Image (cartoon, rainbow, N blue to C red; front, side, top):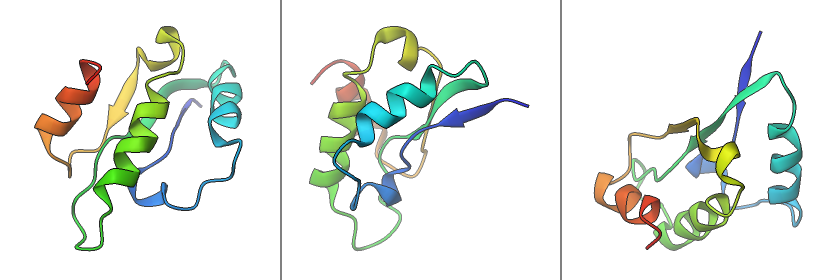
Length: 88
């Protein structure tokens, strides 16, 4: 059994201080085959796009081999995801 590990956009509002280091450690486990689900989720009216953007920005600082296989939430704006994927 393999799994993906990530921060779903709906859950990015109350992350512990060391969340990125913990996630990177999990991604080093051979049973974790992908980073995900990540991205932007604007499904709910109370979505804080700035918080989601900050978490996405931090996720993209992970080593390239960790983000090569990624599951992206489809409820966000594709243009926002594309902008972050290009480093902007």
